[in-house]
Image 1 (cartoon, rainbow, N blue to C red):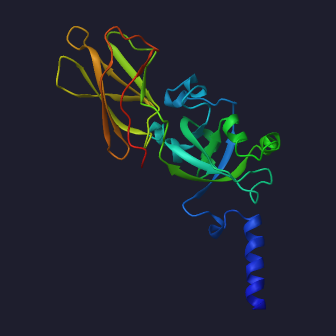
Image 2: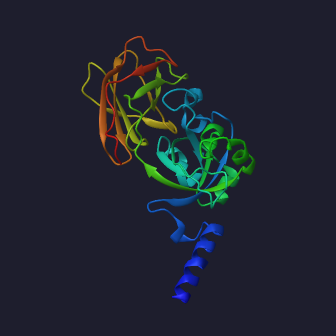
Image 3: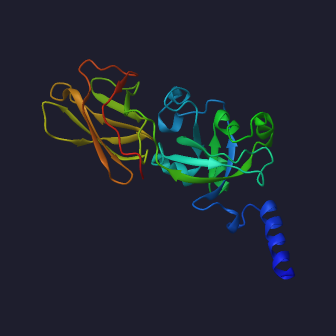
Amino acid sequence: MAANLSLWIITIVFCSHLVTFSSCQPSGFSLAVATFYTDSGSGGACGLEDDVARSPYNSMITAGNQALFKQGVGCGACYQVFCNQTQNSHCSGNPITVTLTDECPGTCNDDPVHFDLSGIAFAKLAKSGEEGELHKAGRIPIFFKRVPCNYNRNILFKVDKGSNPNFFAVVSEAVDGDGDLSLVEIQTGGTNTWKSMNRMIGSTWSVGIEPNTQKPPFSLKLTSGTKQTVTALNVIPDGWQPTKVYDSNVNFPTKL
């Protein structure tokens, strides 16, 4: 019994100092590194721009290294992350959910998995009143797992600012379920043909338009990372404008 007690004590001490010890990981979670940048974060490399500061994201977002960003394919994926007091005494242990909306390049790729959270999201990992102390740490180990996205609303389509009568680009926001997209297709008014769009940057997809024959309204068909599909019929109206956001009446199931 004394030997078993000694082994138990050694395990507890070992876990409190070396969070990489596999038996210390909560079931279903993996280890990563977390840092933070601006308070609201950014949607730059995914094409979301400053929309991440507003609903439905409300700055609960993260940039990721290539393990997460995947050359833009990972844009829109949702992750549950948390840190506990064995990792940093100011951590609350309460999980938060963040959406991948940007890339963390360069030295972030020195870590197997690296989340560069918005300052707002990073602070929510802390105990109440200890947000400033956690910010001072700057870099902390965390636990993470992929989770379904759930925005409690339908998909939003924002027409890219570079769109014109001959070129149409759109970013999909508030995508439930997988969050990330593997294909976007467009159907122009008066046709039954779907045309594949090209991934321009992250969550932004584009296509050339022949304005004399390919007229609005435009329907959009989205295929998720796990090959589920939803179709937003006539979601982009006649007279569409760059930077305008158009609401749909569809979304994916909130599951992976």
